[in-house]
Image (cartoon, rainbow, N blue to C red; front, side):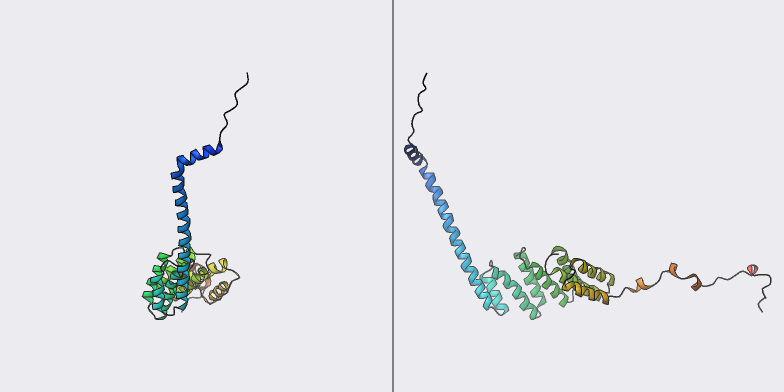
Length: 238
């Protein structure tokens, strides 16, 4: 028994029906996509223009006040972030160590993933050294070497520890830090500096003193010999 052929469909008619049914939703989606594209392009243009203006202003800045102007006018730009570091350097040159350290704190808090965070911490430690706060500076140097072992500041942070430990007469700790530099950064400039410091370091006095067990027996005080233990033919003392 022959089967009836399937009814033919008019594709154009179906498309028109689909359009008439969902044209409001389709138009709304197209408008949203178009607005998103326009907004993205506009934002990129605005961001690029703003970043270029910030870079130009930073290039012409030569004083702490000028760096502060870049920060105030362009706070979320790469140039604005760099201005914090330059401002901190200017404050340090004016021996305003507390203000410089505060500026570096703000930079780190606003840009925790910036590639120069370890540099900012090195500057903070140097400021603390200048203020005589060597314990706090030593702690920051240790933090840098531990948290950023692959950064270009890590070996410098280790070597800075050596100088501070020497000033505190913590010679054995300084020797261990020098050995760490030689192990991690061999065949580098820092390894040469560490080797030179290691030759200058003297072992502590306690390590040079021989223990009581190593004193030769002949150097010990002689014990008194009882008279009964003397030979019979020994002359009596007069």
